[in-house]
Image (tube, rainbow, N blue to C red; front, side, top):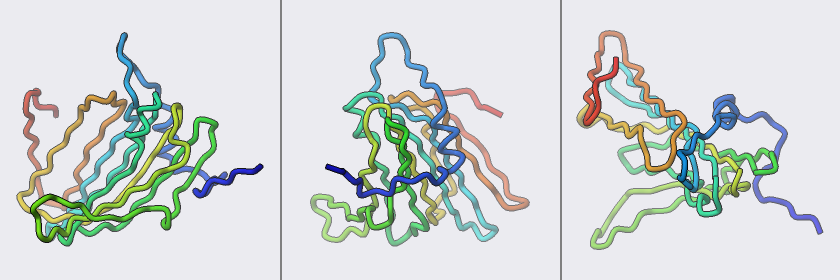
Amino acid sequence: AVVVSSAHASKTELPDWVTQAAAAQVQVPPGAQPKAAILLEDQLLTVSPTGQIVERYRKVVKILRPQGRNYAHPFVEFNKESKLLSFHIWSIGPDGHHYTVKKDQIIEGGTDEWGILYNDARYKTADPPGADPGGIVAYEYTEQIPMYSGNEPWGFQHSTPTVKSVFEIDLPQGWQHRALWRKYESVR
């Protein structure tokens, strides 16, 4: 019998940032048994001269144990004030096969909060193939987000081992930024 995955297994190249992150070695502290590792978490905010912000978010996760499959579900939230511009998902199975999740395999849903009569919060997610121990799941989204207060928190440390975490801001000419650190010395 032949089993065919519903995702698109391809010989097409993965984005460079996926292959580079997938090659990273995970450093696990002695005695630790993490379920998954974040190979890359990369966030870029591009601010237009009018203050409009476009966020590009990339994440690459390696599944280390069967329970790590829970970490391999790409997820993005949006609502009427934030516009999802794109959402792409790739995976590399433990056997090395590359997959691209098709648009019709991405699920869209709404959040339900008890006691809320109307909530416009939406999300998109998928269940990529190859999300088994040794497998890698990568995703990228771009989203137009509102600028309320001009601040953006960055959580660069997680309980899950993280190999590389990047946060960048691309500001228009003449704009400035200021970094405030909580519990850490300022980095310049």
